[in-house]
Length: 383
Image (cartoon, rainbow, N blue to C red):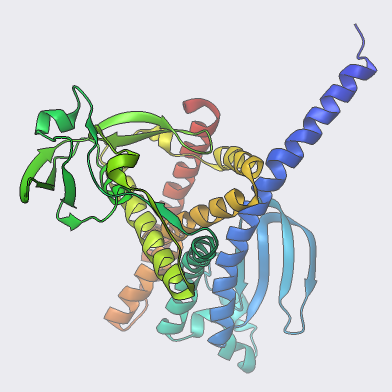
């Protein structure tokens, strides 16, 4: 049977629909996050007087590019899964010094070569990438808080689910949360944030009851929920419910200063939660299906775009803080791995031997590639 015009049109428009609903939002999200990260390296490097040979969004063959008046090659490359800034004197995009290139540098170029800079300048330049990711997240959240504000509810218990950890611990309707695991709470959202990532952990809750306070201990259980983007997520709950009568929801509007303060706090919460998740994952206490790679990010970008541009921008913010955090892990060739070597160099007052660096970098590269392969497998086959 031949292919009809109708079949061809259906295939074409189906592909066209995927491009506009998934591929373009994915490229937008990833390009913004990568560009901001690399721009952090670039701007602080230039501020420190370091020369820049290349600035690339993406890896692999160059698609389009140009040279600026300082000699930097700005380019867009074919594989949109990252980017890099190559500094003067570097052999590769991981800032490994090239003996051959270093020997060919003029005296003026040697002053601007990355590997010949004081350790604090190199550390500042490397740290700037993740720092700019955090600043992007703070900026997005600050704008969102200033425009939309936030709706909060009182941290009260309206209902205790039968058979739940809360019922076993002795929670009662009318109780009010005072603190969770030693941290004071002022909204029901605070309680959810502190509990959701602690499934299986014994947590102490201080509750206001009948004019006094009681301490209850409960262990959150893992449940599946669907988030606003349609992702199935697994979080910890103790089985208490808030309602409008006791929760007394109220809308808070923020001025410019308050918006930035709230954005900093929200970004800090995400960083803490990310670190907590990775610790629990390494200990085998988190579901591997919670980790996703480019395919899942593309799916989330498409779903966010369907809900509206503000959702897509929020996804940029969340992905940005995650990329910043992961890049600070003390694993070569990530930024955190470079910072560890610079810290050792500062402490020892001499660089770490090239032999040691080479061995550690190979191990780190293997770990990074293995992790990338793991999340790709999760995306395609694992979950």
